[in-house]
Length: 439
Image 1: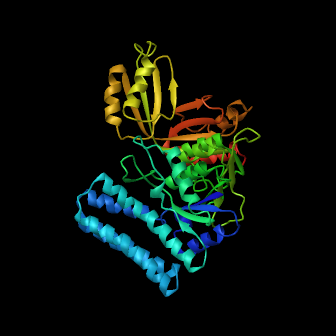
Image 2: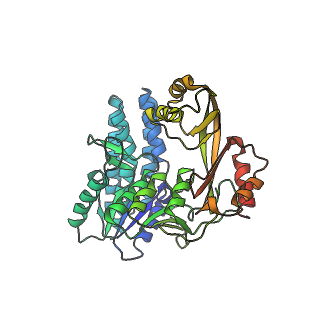
Image 3: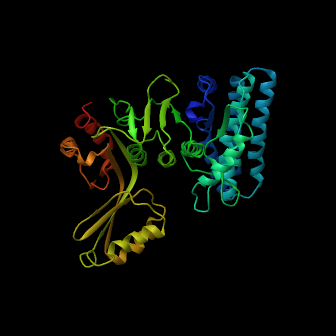
């Protein structure tokens, strides 16, 4: 059995949803299809939720009506028979009745999660109406019946495996299953989610739970490119990546893949394929365990980075100093991306300013604290890149005109990371594309 996940752009228009139906019926292998919400829906639901959080019910109502109109028009082009139109419109009515009811309810975090779940619930139900109209045998597997996270918001892989296996065993006569990405239940049994990009995570978790033959992630681009095609003109797809290489690229900014998607597939050794819904015959990118060859394969950039330098000639070399620094970030559950040290200072980077003021306040007793915002981490990734001759030379010769804030080299065999001002991101990616990849 294989997993096929389709993102928002892949189901964002009726004709694309039709195309997805063709793709999932091209072969006879049993499969579970994971769908995101229609493109733009989650953003619209976030806007509705934000309006309610600020007690602006008029704005929320207006946004609900606009989104409902979009879905009504979508349904008209998705299905054609009278029976199917009635079913599809009834689904839209059901979910927008819920959204209108919440206008009268006090806003809460739990309600916010319910609001955000509506997109995936609608996309899967509407897709199943289309499959039924076209005589394609299938079964809708509600993700809320098997996908769960614990009190630390980590997926309960064991529970997912047991519950999903039971559902599949109860329906051995079915070969095609449809389920929602992104949504789940939390430790309290409430509707929750796997955060942005969570549909990739859902697909990988399901693939791990059933030991799938492959986990296919279908988007609107033909695989992982060696550079950001939105910024750099000459980019090429990378046909083969190791799990470690893909994890580095995803974490450091490659938008095609959610960072958390890698570890379940890697842990259970399920290959992941990144494929293009618009060009289904393109090779795309395969991510698997063992990959031969070394050197630079791709570059990714992570924006919104904050550099924090703690300078203290008195304390830096003292026993336990670094531990105390890290404990501050641990206290506020703030991840560190890069770290460099010198005789009198330590510099780290973080990607969130949520607790920045509190972190600075707790760091100040250790020394002088300097903050640089609007930074970008550029990561050059490849198997054993740190041991590949001339790679560092090519990198630094390529970007000799770029001001470097930090360099991380040797911490990972697969990654060389550079911290630069965000204003130099485009130029840096273009220079690396030419100097390192020869494009």
